[in-house]
Every structure is written in structure tokens, then in C-alpha cells.
Length: 247
Ligand SMILES: [Zn+2]
Ligand SMILES: [Zn+2]
Image (cartoon, rainbow, N blue to C red; front, side, top):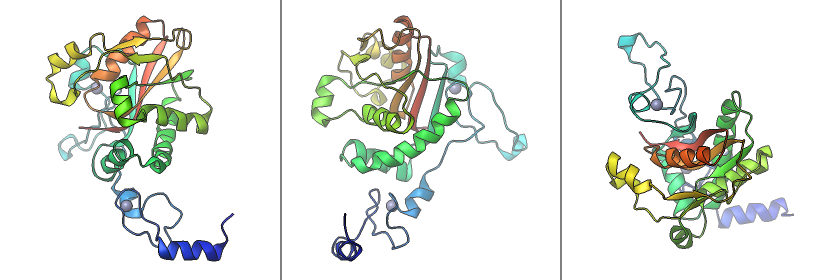
């Protein structure tokens, strides 16, 4: 137990800083995880969006600001194996910085911020789903050794602590070390992912409603391939939950 005078002294020597932007947080903000400027900079994704992949639509004045709920172009063109994808906020600004600091800088205290965001998004997801198990998108062993942890697994663990929904750490395995998807064209991405994942623990997913977890949704190609093999291995339904979405 830290006495209040000792805490005061500690704060004086090591003033508390926002883990995202590193600015010293004011006394009123002390104890919060991130500063109010960073909090304000996180842009939540709200309706209207594509009911399948969650792509946000920004109604223009021309359509009278009317809310639309229709499938987006990519969901009409491409086969989606997951039923829905829901995400918390746009992958930009403070949230992008936070994810980078978490993933590449190992600032694990940020998992609480992601947990807060994910928990409320999960609540909207579970209106239609009774989730049986969370499955984190795995990293290839080479990438895991480089980084030391799988960010998707840490997110699933954080949600498990908050909700009690179990997670299956070893349900999926990445067996092929693939180049970073973002640098590839759409066709190459698909080819690149073929055979990249395997279901290793059939029992935990058979007949289950699975929520596939990842940090960022970019093209959706990775989660789509994971969803495909989960269904092939006997999962009943697959939904996807991520912290942020790149546009
Ligand atoms: Zn900040
Ligand atoms: Zn869509």
C-alpha cells in the first residue's frame, strides 16, 4: 500500500505521463489511463456501416444525412466467411499510436484501454450472438519469437477477465510465415494466405459460435481465411472483433 504522501513525492519525481503521447497528465487526469486529448482523438465507428464487414459510411448532405444499411462493394463482390465484423474505432491518430506502442513497444498497460473499447463493442455483437469461445488470430512462430507475445491473444485474455467468455489459445496455428499483407495486391493476398493457417484444436470450436479476435482489420483477408478454415473444421458461426479498422 502506497501512502498518499509517498505517492505525492513519486508523482513529483516521476510525473505521470499519458502512455500514448507522453505528455504529463494534469492532477485531474491522474489515475486515468490516457490523457483527455488522446481520448478525444479516438474516433469510434458508429452506425451507419456495412452490416457485414462494419465499413463505416459517412452520409453526405446529398443523401440528406439519411442512414443507410446496405452491403458495401467488397462484401457484394467477395465471399465472406465470417458473418459479421465489428470494430471499435478508426485506425488513425491516438489509437493507431496506442496500437503501435502496444505491439512494437510492449506498453502493456494499454491493454486496459483496448479492453474498455472491446468490451462495449462486444456488447453490441452479443445482441445477436451468444458467444461460446474467442479465438485469437495466431502469429507464426518466427514472428512470435521476434515480438515475444501475440497481441491478439493478450486482447482475448483481457476480454476473458472482464466477461468470463473462454478463449482457445491453440485452436488456430499459423503454419506459413507470410509477408505483410498490406504490401500485396488483392489476388496475391489470397494466394499468399492459402494454407497459412490450420485448426489444431477441433474440440474447442466444433459446433460453437466463435469470435475471432485481432488488433487491426485492414483488408479482412486474414480473418476471412481464418473464418473459412474454422467453419471447415466444424465451427457453427464465426464473427470477428477487432480494436481498430483501417480505411
Ligand atoms: Zn495522450
Ligand atoms: Zn462490407
